[in-house]
Each structure stands twice: as structure tokens, then as C-alpha cells.
Image (tube, rainbow, N blue to C red; front, side, top):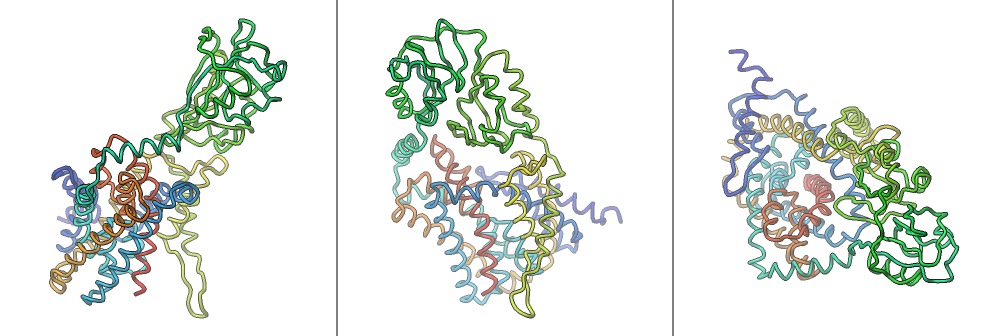
Length: 528
């Protein structure tokens, strides 16, 4: 009997049941790994407990994976044209926080229970994690358990119904989005041009500064019946034919500079090749193309780089990142060297190296223990969750230190997050389960009404502001809304509404900052 009552048996039994329960879908909606929390509530009500160290280890893994995922987007979001979308996340988080505080005062509900309702309504386990560590109370977990199912279902329903509520023609929104996209990210074209301008005869490509002046990449030059891979020292002669890649406007600049476009096909040179490789070589990550002289020595031209689903035209200052897909042109005999040069090891994308993870968490623990004095008798610190989160955000933004690559591939980071979430939810769930019945008996239906209000009002405030004040495309608005609610199920629910990736891009832009904002707002709620 002791075997069945042991800590590790209880841990793996309740997590197994939770995972099985989480796989059950009702009209495409499931609780996924969060079902572990509800099984843990039941086990906690029966008197079972999970050791605190398991919860803390899970918390460290979970928060580190959150920071690693959010880091690059968190810092980049302040630089790119996503300020309007980020404003929506601010509005949703703070309006939700204000509504939560007001309802807490009206119904005289403990603020710690209420902040759990806030975290559950926005389906934010990371917010719950930091709240529990800072308060050492089970009440936030109880509130989270009550609100979470409503948060999952409510966000999905509102996002799916909102186009009908606002009478939006999604096909029209789709066309408008595609028009905007073509202006922001012009299509990369490849054309051939004849050298006809006498002013450039007998001058080198480097001397003419063709790349910097036109922002194009010249991948081939056909001269004297020979196809060559150009370099900065290549001399242009009358009636040479150049093959170049760039946007329509950039190629027009090149045409004005060297000569008209031609439809004459270039002869096939078996010694000339075009290949693509994935950047996995630790030695070239975070280095600019200007710092890689081997490319010029081997007459290799990087025509385009595909990064995060977007093609970019590289220049001498462009830095290579782990996972970049580079398209190159050059002599066939040099391609084997390029494979080694770039790495091209797809297995590395899915490899989980635990050394950067444990080092990053250790740095976070140190940061979390730093005390900041705010008065003679009072000081504050970030604690385990705050320290690990800050560490992961900074390290993922840095990307690489020496031979250590801090970034983690998507599948590996997902594994780390799920493992941490399993341990964390098991611990907090059993703690909350011991008190949940008494809490429900004392507060009745008020908690459910508060939950629905915290979900619905902020979402509609955000939708109204985004549509009528910011005048955002509704597909982008829906993506930003689901990102602001940190709701992946809701994003999945709106994906069938359009063939474009507008919701996904907006979600990815907002999600990192929303994660952090919800954590901040939840801690502000406690102050009231």
C-alpha cells in the first residue's frame, strides 16, 4: 500500500490521468496539459501532496522556456511596426486588471483569490506561477482552477463570433491584407540585364557599388561565352549579361544604371550551381557577411535569406542567425565546402542541449536572489520565477556567447515547457485541492460571474478600440486579440477563417509582450 501512496507514484499517476483527460476534445476544444491541474485538484482534495521541490523544478523549467520563446520577439517588437498591436495587449491586460480589482471590491472577494481568477481568465500559467511564489498562498491556484475552463472556451467563442457581431466581410479583409503585405514585403524577382551603359564599361562591380546603390544581388555574369560567379573585382564589359535578384523597384534601379532587361535565356553551365543551406555552424552564427571572407574567396553569392517565414535581401552588415535558410549561387565545385561552412545539420535544430538550459536557470537563480533596497527596512527581489524569466529573456535575445547557443529550437523548447508545466501544475493543483470546496461554499456564484466578466469585457474593449480607433484589419485584430489573451486554442479556432497568415503573424508579434504584461498586471492587482 505504501507504494501507491508514495510521492512519485502519486505524481506520475495524476499526470497520466491528466494527459489522458487533456486529449479529449469537444468540438475541437481540449484542456491539453492543463487538465493535469484539475486532476491534481481532485487528488489534493483527497489529501495527497506533491513535494515542493518538484513544483519548484517544474517552475524553473517552465519559466525558462517561456523566456526563451518570448525573448527575441519581446525585444524586436519594440523596433518593428507592431506598436499598434502591442497597444492592444496593453489595453486588454490593464483593462482586465482594473475590472478584476473593481469586482474584488464590489463582491468583497480576497484579492489573492481574485488574481487567480485573472490569471485563469487569461489562461496564463506563468502569471499564476509568479503570484504563488510571491504570496505563498493556495488561493491564486483556486481562482485559476475556477476561471481556466471559462478562459479557454470563452476566448474561442468570442473570437469565432466576433466577425458576425461586428458584421465583418472576412473575404474583403483578406484582400486588403494581401495588398498591405505586398507593399510591406515586396516579392523577390530574378531578371537578366544587358550591360549597355558606356559609363560603366571596364569598371568592376565593387567600384560601381551596385549592391549598395540598388540593393540587388548579382548571382551570374555571362561574358565571352562563359558563365562566371561574380565578385567585387569582376569587370563589366559591353553586352555582358547579368542575372540579378531583388524587388521590382530595386531591379528598376539596376536597369537604369547598367542597361535594359533581356529575355534571352542564359546558357546552362554545369559548373555553376544554386543551393540552399541551413545555418547551424556555431562559428559563423552572429557574424555579418562582411566578416566572412571565405564567401568572396570562393565566389559565393548569398542571394536571399529566409528567416521566420520572410525572405530578405542580405547586405554586408547582415548577421547570420541560427536556423537561417540561405540561398547561394556559385561554382559547383565549392558547394561541398559551403555545406561544411554553413553547417546544414538539420538534426541540430531539434537537439536539446541541457548545458545552456541549466546555466541559464542558474544565472536566473542568482538574479532572483539579488535584493534591491527600497527603504531602510525593506528590500525586494525577483525571486526564482522573476530571475529565471529575466535571464531567459536576455540570453535568448543575445543568442550566443562563445560556443554556447542559448536559443532552443521550437520542438525542444515545447518539450521543456511541457515537462515544467506537468511538475508545476501537479504541485499547485494538489495544494489548491485541499481548500477549493470551502472557497466555493463561501463565495458561491460570484466567482463564476466575475470570471465571465473578466473574460468578456476586456476582449470587447480591445476589439472596439482596435477596429474603430486604430482601424486595424480585422484578421490582424483577431490574431492580436488571441495573442493578448495568450490563447493558442483561440488562434487555432480562427485559422480556418482565412487562407492568409495574418492572424498568426499578429499573434506572434503580440504574444511575447502579452506574457510579460499579464505577469506585471497580476502583481499590480495584489497591491490593491
